[in-house]
Image (tube, rainbow, N blue to C red; front, side):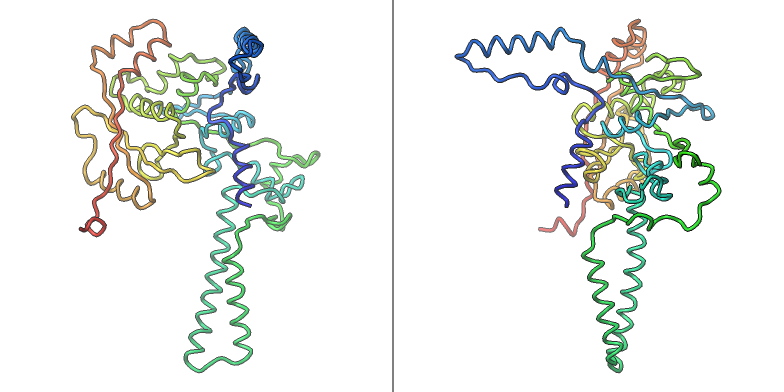
Length: 385
């Protein structure tokens, strides 16, 4: 079962980034035989045919990202279902606004209301969590009942009826321990009566959802990486497409200074993404980022990243730092301190004066150097001689 699940996940999340490479469309280059000139000719023919073709990535449509003003800040949303699925499955970008991580609200509602037989499909993370909670409640109730029988047996002994009931309870507990399936039968999770808000969501003619209420929210570093580094998204604000300069200004919130928090975070984000790590937000653990080897569906994050400006100034108190370290160690992750070297103001201003935007940002981020330091708490009980 686990092997089949692993193969299924490998097929779904086969691409680490939302890019279409030439090898994906044209296949691998043929092997050559050194002493066979025909194989050399065929190799040159394949290389030339690929070289003069339009790169497959240029033919792919870009995902549309909408800019929404929230007070003095902005938020970036992806509303198209196909774009949301593409960005999540190919790099794990963004977070569903109505979900824990990947946007599954539409599938959850279809399961709950059993639209088009969706109740028999695999569970989402939220559904699995709910099922596990109910299983834990039922198991605790059985364990409490078993403990009552054990107490009675120590005091006065059990009758034959009580002994049979105790054996039944212990058998049910063993069955629950060995059970590892979270597939609910069709209609099991469906409510007895449909709520009024559910009626507003469903089209009475087609018996389908009128629209998907969920969006994929992107972090600023994710958006700029997708736009500047990969060029796979198109940012729209008030029906106008934004350039890289416009997006950079929105992310910087008008404060164009070398120690801006966005610049430090993006330098670290780009650094780890270029090394093949899957980088996600670490706000729920009090840090800046989390590093996954492959992604959330495969395993938990191994490292928690804390971005620190390497400018000699105090960036936080030791009390806050120790609190973060305790939280990270409590969830069995390794804390990594990412020190970022910040360029001088004169160098920064000179780079920002470059007219070509691509060359400007490429040169700018080359001046931000990232150094990683692994932090571990010293435990006397674990380091005795």
